[in-house]
Length: 293
Image (tube, rainbow, N blue to C red; front, side, top):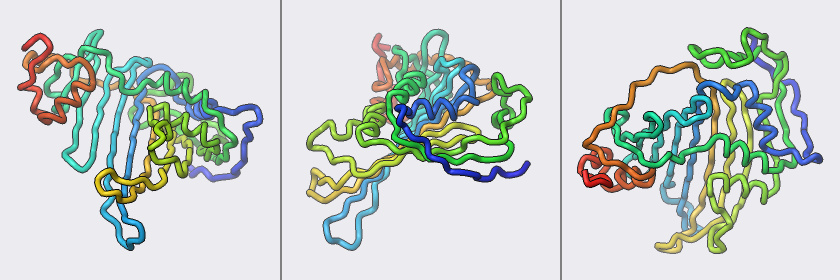
């Protein structure tokens, strides 16, 4: 199969109020809405402390929150949430159990009952919010060549594609330009309240891009102007990034969820995080549930 070649980088103007949602939907159209879909969300924050005028700097502190969410016909089926930082990694799973959900702290060996419907990532809500974010212009790459519309190896053909030939030209990447207020609205999709607090560091620079391959990826990063640490007034440089990838999956066999009565019922995801922070993955054994078990 010949490799695609970049043939143009046209610019689309937003004189007609082009939205980030419209661009996203155009690039996501080949994935379809039915069947099994995985959304991968990765948030990274890198903080560097450096006294003014110093040549060297302290080692940066990195925080990564990684989430895999799988939907079956747009209904949340399974999810994994992992937090990586200076301390020990924290990770838990969520899976559908009948009409409710369960959680696991040990990779799926033992499951406890999750009382509330988990709010991890709402794909429909996210896509609707993107439609409210106005784009000034978008510079994109048009590629020539074959494009595999059948999904990853071993997956089912995407709905509506069958064995139809791939288009000879398609948009592969977009660099998006938007105003500062529009970008702040994008941050608030995930409740990143930059500039909501008058004492918070101000937004310094930002960038947004979209890419399409076997999945569709929205990536954006931002940096904050220097702030002072609460401990010793050392200037902090903060840079954050978000990557959201949507991919179609084939039929997948998963082990059945069986509740372990020794594990406590947990009211919501905050309760799961509380167990991890307090006792680690094995601590749920000693935590009583809401009914005193």
